[in-house]
Length: 232
Image (cartoon, rainbow, N blue to C red; front, side, top):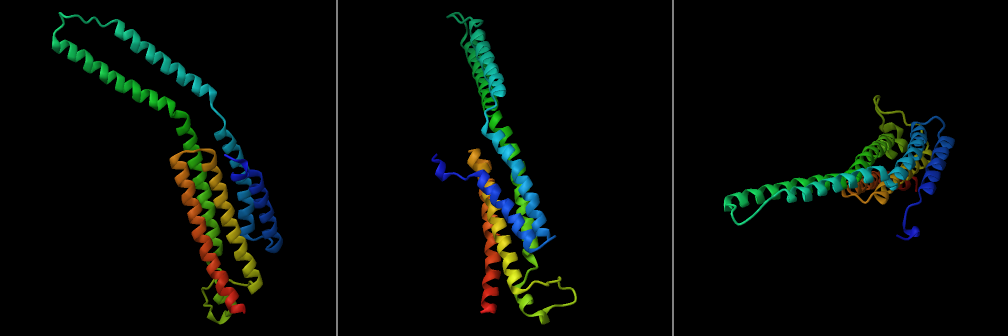
């Protein structure tokens, strides 16, 4: 694949790092800024995992090929022990053939298990980190959940149990913008896993996270539209 058509991990990580600084400069001590800082560290760790996924496990492959060679050698050797001649009864020949077919099926299943072992190990680790990425998306969604433009513009709508909303319209707009940008970057980090490991389960999980982030981002843009309409 052309390098221009792939996501650049370093650029994504640099953008996340810059976003965390922008949030904390605008909203010092905010939970959103701390979450972004934590996600930046998580992204750096993800780089190590993705690099590990990209590498071939030559030790595991060597062991796998050795096992396959030994199994095939045993199959060939077992055939040399079979003595078939015209004096054998048909039932005996059928029994031998049936046992051979069963053995072939078991050996085939074992070979498939060994050949796909490396990908399954990588898939398990990738899914573990993708689930953590999905968790970050939900945390960002919680941060923007109580940021209601209508209550910011009209404090009279508040109740005694309403969350504290001390943002100005401009601050609320910036906060929601940061949330939308954060969600977009979360989706991009998830896409890096499917870009590195062409596994159906990983690709589906990554796509689900991207869709989740996109849907959450749409909710934020709806709030921004309401905020802009009230400010005009």
